[in-house]
Image (cartoon, rainbow, N blue to C red; front, top):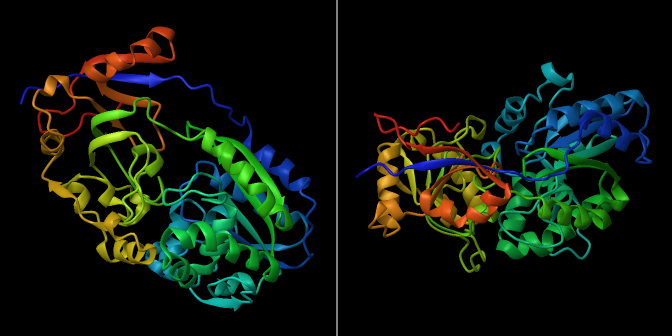
Length: 417
């Protein structure tokens, strides 16, 4: 097969970005109207997602807690992630630089929960046992569109209050109902936790399409349910997206839990892969190859089924027990299927061409991205480049380099850029 030339391009996006994330966090906290009990123990609840400025925000939250004379500690609020073990969830936080040696806050990790009144909620309501013993709980999370469902509350504070703090037991209870459990019942659980638990504050992080922080807001617990939907719509407007809607092949250098809860953002690749649920309206991509699992995933390859082909080097890094735990809890088993495993990057490319029915490789519509968080820098083939001609002419898209070879002499992907 003759090599197919690629071009490296950059989409110039005019995205809002915070010049000083720490200062904005301080300002939001100082004006949130929440006070803490001096001498009290305050749990700062954190999830399993890789958020660019999370360490900075958490550091400022911990400092704010101490200024009020209270004592902060960290609790993992990540449902069944981290292999659904206390040790695994603590390891996730430590891998993000959120260990005690970095922040001066101990991590208290447990999978034990206590049950709260359910009211009219159709499922039991649980919350983290260690957090329940604290004098107050502060939630810190990014608000963004979810990869499994759409509604007024998706990935954000309400979901973390419900499923994150509720650990595997709450995740099992809600995921048993599929998307309905997430879209309809999850907000009901969160409201019960807010009413009967000890959450006092939510710190919401909003990121732009360039994976940079554009806003940080501190919201008193009583206002979280009312204010989060508007934050979600802001985040949706500024979410990453590909500059093309139709591709034969998409190559993704890496996937992982720090990129998306399902490894690759379904809103970017246009695949949901949930039994009984309609597929996304777009983009339309015939074949997807993924080449690596991020180290921060700790072997969790949840979402690998969204790809058609993976490499043997990626397959060797999968922890199937951890992945199974996450997949079975979610109930979305198709996303846990092992794709076709190619011996190397070049073979993965050839098999994707075959799967997409591409006869003339010189006419293939293909793109390469690092991951689904970073869609402004791409490699594209000539066929895609022609579709982007108007944007290139206007200066919205810049061609950085032409006639780039996809693979080196040993069949490995050449460095991205």
